[in-house]
Amino acid sequence: MMTKKNAAGLSRRSFLKAAGALGAGASLASALPAFARGLRQDALELSLWWWADDPAYKTWVDDTAAKYGEANAGISISTLQMDTCCVISQFTTAAAANEPPDIQFFFNGIYHMENVWLGYVEPLNDWVPAEILEQSNATSLSVYDGKQYRLGWYPVPLIWEYNKDAYDKAGLDADNPPATWDEWLAACDKLKTAGITPMGGGISDGFWGEWYLGNALTQSLDTPGDAIDLFIGDKDFRDPKYYAFWSRLEEMVSNGFMNDDMLSVDLFTAATKVTTGEIATTQVVGSVAASHIPLMGDRVGLMVMPVFGEGALAGVPITDTQGWGIPSGTEHKQEAADFLMYMQSPERQTAFWETHNFFPGNKTWDASVVTDPVLKQMYDTWVGGETSVYIPDLMPTQFWTDAMFVAAQEIIGGNMTGEQAGEQNAGIVQQWRDLNPDLVENYQKWAEGLAAAE
Image (cartoon, rainbow, N blue to C red; front, side, top):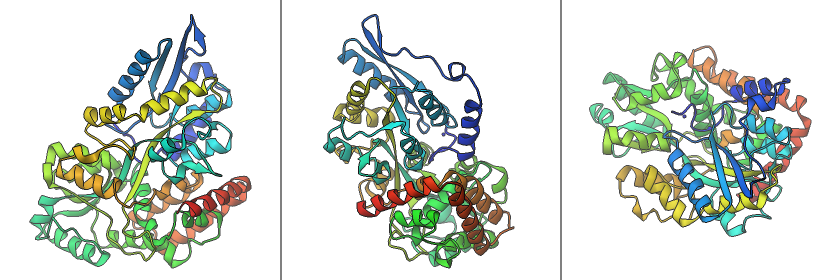
């Protein structure tokens, strides 16, 4: 949700803090940069606000904007790379003031869907051909009531990364990592005996918990719509099936399989320890694992979280997608749509790969150019193969701050059981439903669309 403050999505606490600060009477002119809009001396300047994982793909973004301007006389595009905390909250503030940019980066799922429900994001179906919408691979989480609101940019695989040298040292088969939960626990015992922390992470910023929920809760689901049913009350977090993922975290903590400083370090600080072998396994996204290849080469190991659940999605690789949309308030929707389609062109997709050595999201991109064995495994498994969507993209804001983050920290601190976490989660979603009946209706319609898509 990057240097990267978070890879999978926007911090819900940061979102609320930034939105509150800007919304409480602050001057939009002082909070946001000034961009030329409309015709300026016979020239049209479009504004683009964006964010990306590290390595932040600024070279490609700026080059794409420059080349589009060269090919379209009279049009220029001004790009602004924003901080994780602000790229969505400032957009919401600007859209509410009818001063949005012309082109906007959007995280997937609820991160842009809340703005869809506010009427701030333009459906793309009337501006972009259906074939391009589908090929961009924005995922079903970008669709609401039959309309698509984002084009895909690049994939965000959710991966358990491991150090093959650490596995070798513990006497494990590094080329065949554990696939079931029993195999995983047995591997953890061997790693711990060898003096290596089996699983590492940092949860001071909350994102490790989000990634864990994405990898683990998914195993109890048959469709992404099941997650929405948990939030709207049609399913219950107090059901052992739906708090089992918290119990598995409790099991790893109680067995001493995780690093002792999890509560005091952030996700990415801890994740780097897998490159040194200090920890054997960690949760990452694809761009982070790719950045470890120069340090570890083919000793970077990739696996899906070992299976404990019995849902249809258990064991299915999980991939999210970053993307782009058009604000409803821009006066230049056609020009914005033309630029988004240019981003999807074969030339720009190839340039993304050649510039940053990472995959673009478009399904038509020729992946035969991927020869590095780790990147090829990543692409074939998490991008080109059968995948599931990223369930945390469906979490209401209150669930992120008051349920997921709290439960993960309490379990890691040894202060909460999996069953107690299920009870706590159920209480928070009930509070959310009571406070947001209108959002519950939107979620219900969204769930119906996801079920149909599946």
